[in-house]
Image 1 (cartoon, rainbow, N blue to C red):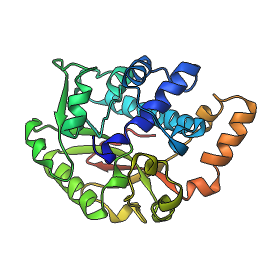
Image 2: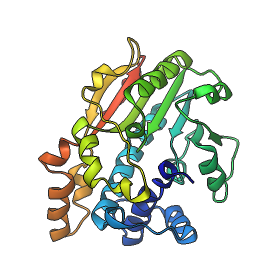
Image 3: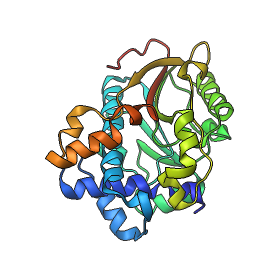
Length: 267
């Protein structure tokens, strides 16, 4: 895999770590894959604090996706940059057609652990060349999950991707985590993705500057809700909150939702 693709091991480790500890989320698939892959993380990417953060981030995305899927009637789920994640098993499809999308070599690796079904498909695709969207049937509604993806796309590439979604679907709901420009700048010095060889990332200054007249910024979500921080024990809870949920951290990492159409089911 190239260096960007190797970043998938950081959240995989986090989900396996918290699942083994019995906190935040249960992900036996992550435990299985992490044990089988034997990938070695180094430096900050192997930190237990980052592992807790990855587990919380995954749980937040799960909660949002579950709400969208439970309220959907005729929707497709596009899980962009799926890596080896088992969100489709944690959330379930509830009758929606679910597509896990990532680079071809990632999907090839993923096929070792997952199989297509009638309601679940794996697709090789890159949001910077969304010709693969032609394989998705035109539908009324799309639920788009972009966890750990936007920071590898330039603002122009992200804008083009949202325009493609706007043209494809009547209704769209997107959740994506983003770096701020400050986080992108500081990543030269302290970002754990450097431990797997990634050196170029991007930040978003104003979420309202990305999108279109119809597919627009809707609201910001909490990255580290207190309910998940409370799953940690005393001293770990206090240290994690200082490292990943304090005022400085909130200046670095954001969670943005975009919507098109009369979707309106988020809280």
